[in-house]
Image (cartoon, rainbow, N blue to C red; front, side, top):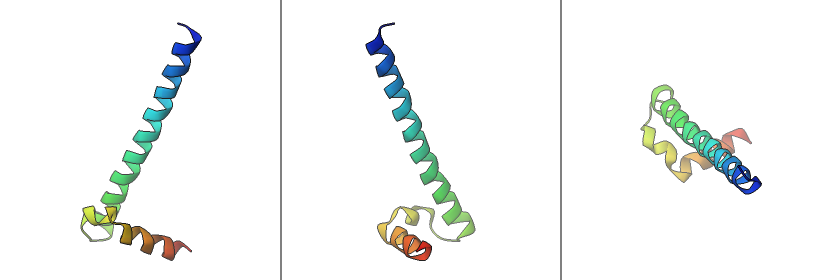
Length: 58
């Protein structure tokens, strides 16, 4: 395996891990918002909900 192939394989692995993390965050948010919050799970994807969450945190 050449150095270029090793770098490409490492970059693909990093991107895959980041995408999996984002996907798990979104799914977890939907489950939490739907099950614990009692709301529509897809509503968590709306920007207004995130504005409210960020205002609550600050």
